Length: 382
Image (tube, rainbow, N blue to C red; front, side, top):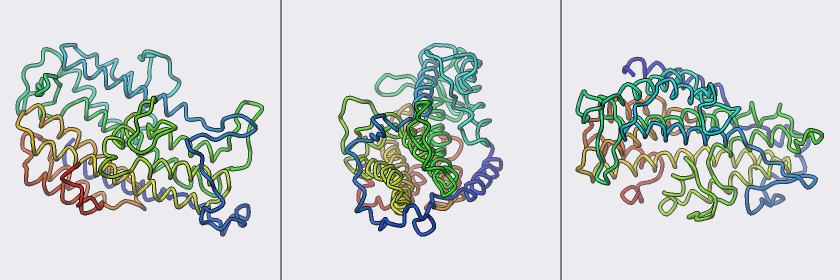
């Protein structure tokens, strides 16, 4: 994407996010919660993300689970391009939009419609370029798309600027779809605010949850957390996407419990109609998700700074770029870096051409992120 276009889209993204506000179903304006003290003393969250009513589970985020599985398959398809398979552009585009049942199972949901609208063309262009680059790819070099080989022997398909297609899509959609939906949709007033129904259930149709409960569950569903997620998780249920990276960084930043407890207490607060506690937990989620993104980016900067193999460097740079790009979608009322500051890190520090990215610029990004998100004490360990 050209620099000028990127800046325009970033500003539009920022303006759009400003119109979305965090949950504000305040105790003071909602009589149904007037007997609660707002301190959480009346709320006991469950040990796992499990809630029931009338003997039936009230938790449902099947749509989010479907989209996580779809991204898994889309990423697996792109990886084949580095292993000698010529990628079908049509299939990649169909997987993004879930057209013509391109997956191993039939889904009723899709990724494209839930991706930040102004960026759908960007992701479609990456898929187009990946398919073209997979046709008899040479060894990649500056200006030439092709194959780079990592120290572990894995081959990866990169564009002419050395950016790994798999990571541009995976980390890109983790931000533009999953993260964006959490912080700019499901945890805003439009989904869990004062106008949203938290009374009615449709038990006749097997829906034992209120609309507000369901929306909060959908935010949780995009995290990729198992329902029993906890510190240094090693349970039988797999972590996905944000859950995976949260668990990887947990030794250094201890976010598993912080985020999981906020989701469990926030959901329990909805059940108790204690909206002040709900607001508090939503704020924790906003703040700690940004910390997770920053810590993940620093982790890959540290790798780049230590690597000598070109494939290793470009793989980790691609991951780093994707995480920093996710900060574009942070909720405008809660973000710590402005849209223009994120733009500076992406365009002026990493740059569009990864062959030209410098160590001084990476150290600048590392310092900026660690200082902004309180990670100075662990930045070299991440």
